[in-house]
Length: 117
Ligand code: HEC
View 1 (tube, rainbow, N blue to C red):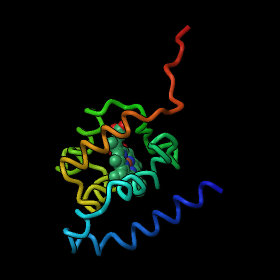
View 2: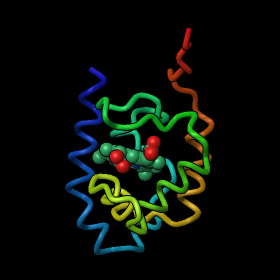
View 3: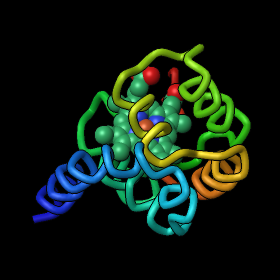
View 4: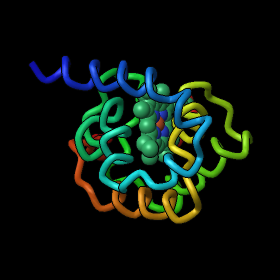
């Protein structure tokens, strides 16, 4: 029953998001583990098993790539309503972005390089 848990978490996140948006201090105080849980709702545990095929795998991606992508969602250079909402609701700071990027880059995923034979 793995698919149900992320679904309920997403519902919770959507319900709670407006409160966070109005209370930056509360969002800033969110522990790192809670931020990771938010990511897991879509990208799967450790960013390795996204809940939908069009959601990217984060596990094992280069840290600087992940950090750049998150920064770009935050400043609007990369435009995606789903991720822009995450970055905003969680009030991700530079420190959060670097910590999250570092964490996901160290996780392993089932991705492999295809043999071109
Ligand atoms: C509600 C679902 C959802 C949640 C929660 C979520 N993401 Fe995403 N994420 C997406 C989708 C969808 C995309 C693809 C967006 C695009 O095409 O630009 C994405 C893309 C990304 C990318 C770019 C990956 C790439 O290969 O270019 C990064 C990095 C990322 N997310 C990190 C995070 C982090 C860190 C969190 C937690 C703080 C998080 N996401 C939470 C849905 C989500």
